[in-house]
Each structure stands twice: as C-alpha cells, then as structure tokens.
Length: 277
Image (tube, rainbow, N blue to C red; front, side, top):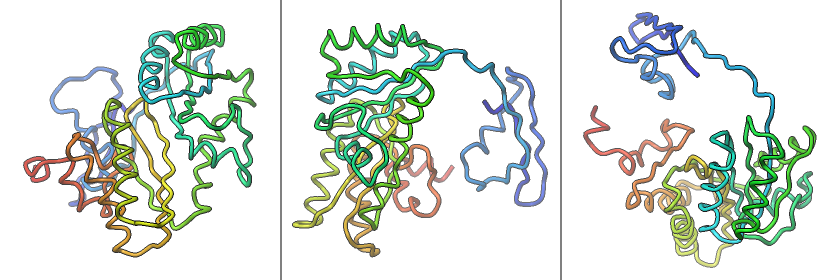
C-alpha cells in the first residue's frame, strides 16, 4: 500500500521519493529501504499510500480443528474456496482459547472448549453464502469439527475481540512475548520443541506458553510465563524459542522488528554476509 516516502537521513539530507505511480521501475525502489527498518536508516516524515475501494462484502468464520495436519489442509481448502479473498487465518491453540473465553475474560466461547486448535478466518470480498458452502464441504471432508459464521457486525467484532484479548496472558506475569516466523509445515514440531525445551530448562516449574498467531502467513506468537523475570531466566526462555529456528530456517522476528532485544539472536535468521551488508 506504500507508493512512496520522504525520509530524513542522519546527516540531514532529505530524501524525497514521494512516488504517486502504481508502477515505477526506474532504478532502485528506495522506499523499500525504509519500510520496516525502525528508523535506523532514516526518519520517515511523509508517505504516499495507495487507497482502494472498500469491499462491499466479507465473511468472518470461527472453526474448531482436531489436528495440525488438518489445519494445513483446511487453509488450502478455504483459500481456494474463497477465490483468493482470504484476508485472515488466525490460529488459537487450545490453551489460549481457554484463556480468552474463561472469566475474567469477557468473551464467551463461540465453540466448545477442548479441541486442540481453533481458527478465526475472514474473507474480505466473499459473502456468507460462499463461506457457508466452503465450511459445509470442509465438514464433510473432516477438515474441521465445528464452525460458526458471524451473521452481523456485532458478532464479527465479538470474534475478533476474543482473538485480540492478549492482555489475558498478563494474569500470569511476568511475560516474555515472542514473534517468530517459519514455514507452516514446520510449525507443529517447532511448537512441540519449544515446549519440551521449556520443560527441560525449568524442571518442576509451572511454565505457561500461550500460543496463537497468523498461521496464514507463517507467523506465531508466544506468551511465556516462567514465574521469574531475571536476565538469566530471560536468556533461557529466549534460547528455547530461538535456537530451534536455526535448523528449520525460521525468523526470530516476523513483524515486530529486531531492535536491541533480538540483536544477539539475529545470526539465527541472517548469515554473516547479510549482517555485514
């Protein structure tokens, strides 16, 4: 959606790359240097954004899934069935779903608790009749175990409020929050590896790991509560989360950036030549 930017460099130079064209291949696309670099190359002072017509239809669904392999199969099915309009595929592990649908959380469970995975999905540009047909086929094929479709904006907002109620994790602080990225095919084993690593690093402790994320684009979040917030404990938790990513070529930061906190772990996701460049 970003067509151009104006940025001020460290020496005061003002780089004006306020492109207003949708296509422009005249040399380097300089705006991409600044998007996502957290101000480390320059401070963005203006931006040109592309606007699109608001879609007239959308469908918001919530489903329960019995196994991780069915999650991947359902993602492929629903993406095809909605004709490329799928805009959200948010997976909630059972522990996170229980957390956000049990008091003091305000949202009620739209589906019964007890399934290992739940998915909040939205297709902007698809209406409910298409969504209903797609979910009916998914049920028939055994890809999902149960489902609901939001019938109005109020129900849609309630489904998203449940997914967005991450603050419930803070009942069990201190919390260490993580934002990693990896291929969908590696997720099940990776999450198991993280939990096994935490159990080994903190034997006998009640370490909670609430797991959720944007599975549709390979992004997972952890909220881990080891009970104590010290540098030594933080390093142990980070090691459990980040080290397994090296073997599967994952990223220590999917969307939240690197900053100072993740800088020591950057070598897991970038080789020396990339870091030097």
